[in-house]
Length: 194
Image 1 (cartoon, rainbow, N blue to C red):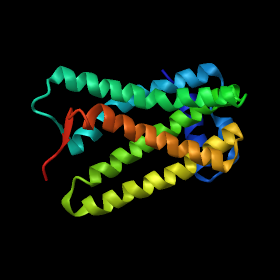
Image 2: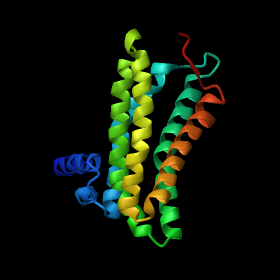
Image 3: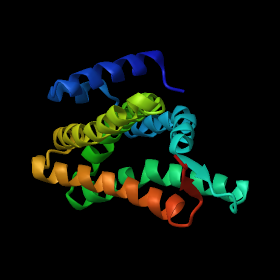
Image 4: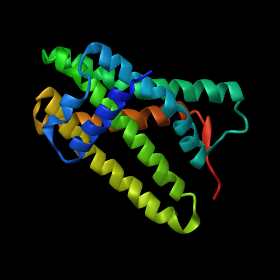
């Protein structure tokens, strides 16, 4: 698992990222081993992701529990590894593969913190009067997260804000596309009746 020192360093790095301080990268393990270890954050995020999905969606009654489980597991794994793999491929094409790998630890920690924040805001959305403000807050979080992700990618890869912003948008589109293609379109899950 991740060490206490690594967790404290990551939170320090995230705090610096929130201030748009480019030194945030120094607080993350930028080695290939550190990048691999940061994928361990997928484990504590799994239950949060499951609860988030079932806050707003139900399993289609005509779908077996096995199908639901396999579809959600496939979505979860692909949504966590697709963009990092794309980032490595792009890094290789730009002759910045080392920088792309070095960016993965901070990227995964940033994604972890966003998932936790989205979960907490989503919980507020379950309470009738707070549903509207929670929806607005989620939209603001998405927009702000794209700005922070662009800063993170520009700092880590040195590709300029336009390229980094484009990558951040591509990351968002990949996640939403996987959700639609693997869970919504085949009717594995359906929106809850209000």
